[in-house]
Length: 496
Image 1 (cartoon, rainbow, N blue to C red):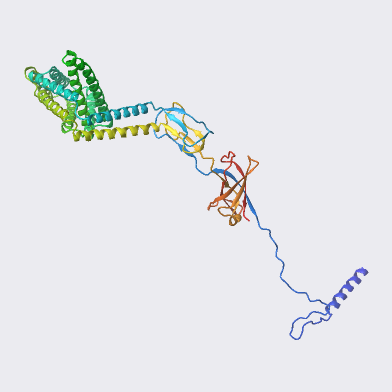
Image 2: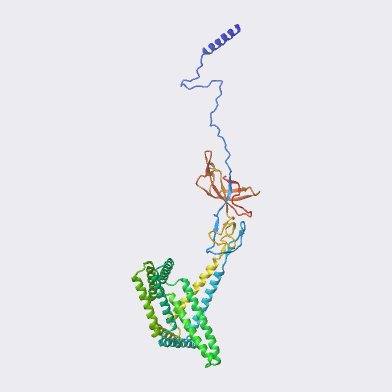
């Protein structure tokens, strides 16, 4: 205890001595502090800055992506798949046929179009040489045949007229029986179907001949011309041996008949190129009116007035048949007279040769046939599916025997690849620009690939902590390696 007291007293004494020590002033007259004599003057200068080594490259991860989007390819037409020439993963060159459709019908159409064109060119060449005696003889034979037909009809009704009148009488009798018996469900259905067919026929007449009808009429005309030529060849061969013989005369008549058939086929073809005649439209309208009347009759209840009308129609049909059986047919006589006039006009034309109007028609037909050949060739080409690029097949969606519809397969243009970064920090963007050199290392390869920055996408793709991540596209230089989209790796971007 005594020792502790002594220590406390000594400490207090030392503190008191320090407080009483006199402070020596080192200020001059101006109040500025002066250094002590024993202190050396130390100059004051700038503090040193920390040196940071600049970056020479930026490293980022990413993956390969296609520079060109996947290319879906499809047939330009539909049909049954005949062959598939590729499989997924196969490399194909531009223009290579990837698949084909069954083109049997298309080839037939092309052959027929070429045949028609060849025939029309031959006919035009023949017509340009002027009238031939054989054509004049054929037209004369047709004129003689038309006159004979007129004389035959003028003598009385034909068997055809009588048959038609008998058919009309049978139909009137059937209608009368239906009215008396009453309409059945089957009768109503048949009448409705007949009305629908008549209305469809009227719509078709108003719209004119369809492309199919035109082609059929042209085909019939070509067949009639071929038959005429064959008859002429046979006639010329036989008549050269014996001009007045029975065979020659028979062949001459055959040529006349064939010529008339050819002219009739030509007239029918020309009719398909023109709007429907007023008579044809009226006939179709009459069919619709008759079908409506028939349906209305069946839908109505039986009554004395319906029975009376049916009985009157039946009586009229009987009267018509009786008239034909006892008198000539004026309609047939008028038609026969018109046929004589037409045959006479064709004979006159044969003697004069090809007219300007006929040449214009021939030129138009040749132009149409050329167009048909071109269209048939294009349609045939559509049965093939060519590759649009040097690509790799990604997938195949068709098989032999299936129906082609939609995308047949998908192609990838793997020669043009880009490396797409996925974790480039925004802190490194300022050092990058389009054209910055890059070296890319991909995991499947030991060697590296060179390239350049081709785009810096403006929209941030993600956040890592509080730092935004951006995407940079690096276009790789051409390489002999098989690069595939999705391969991952690292890119070193030179920023020095």
